[in-house]
Length: 411
Image (cartoon, rainbow, N blue to C red; front, side):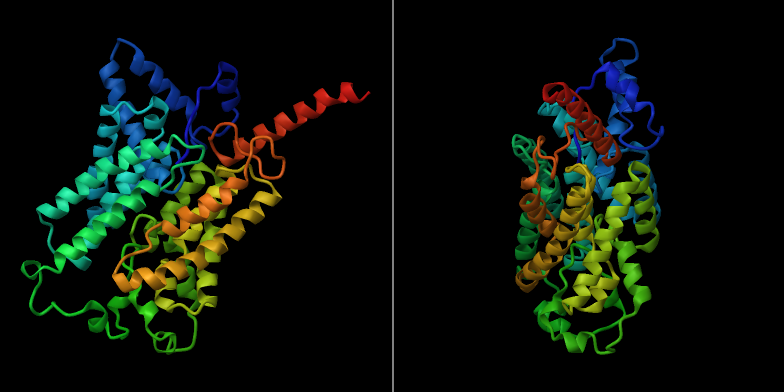
């Protein structure tokens, strides 16, 4: 979810000091962009550019604007959740095509910023089908594709502002889709007579083996039950808590899988070790804070209480703010705030059979990111969004240069 602006030849030379496959690999992106403009083999390079933008868009879901990271996530989802990858790929590619049709800025397209919101619509809606509607009909297909179009247009609309778009288009569009499909599923022709029972009453606050598995698009209905019944064992399984920390990263893609979660952390680390560290800390903050709030353990064990905090801490911990002690503390505070907000929203949304999606992250992100400013030494804003390590290096270089310029004036 990071963007690119034009860079001078001097900055391109400075990029060479970074590891080849780490960061945003801007030299690769710029090389493809230049060759697409040429007459020789331009069609082939446009194809490569589309592949690069697509895999970057997959990585952008967890802020990893890196084609290697995105490709690693694609392979992992293909092995662990092929259905999720299929629908996510369809909507992601559709979003990329639409962005070309409406002529979005090249820098936005090249960095996958028109891919990740449509991709999320595909993965979340497809994950929801077997849980809520059991059938994939024409209405679901129409809503998914229409939502993809809406999300691309909303991305362009929100990008006019001064702050990152993040997942606002996804949350708006997916919430509409969930409400429409939920209302339609209540119609008699969509209901199985055996299953036509109030879902909250049918759940009856009972725990079984299948209830241990959840995903971000399934609201934790058990949160409206009595916690002492849900946590009847009275003991926290810290091994399962660690599992929840790991699967927090995979829950961003609506997948509850330890292997997928582990590889996604690795993919983030390839992009930026700093972002990987803050993502892990965010997942820990979310999981532990949720336990402190007395939520059902199963939600923590499956990563449902870690993924929003993961997004909050990683976005503010070096990506949209230059990393320093103050911004690090701010990101940890934002992670805690995200859990409290998720707890509050879940109380209301779960009664309507709606998921919080990434709404807690989006609200927290916009509340906290307003403190930044390019000239603020406490909460500095990066000049160009690339990756945390480079943000800090450039900021320190500019600060040293500014200090040297002020020395003659003070003599």
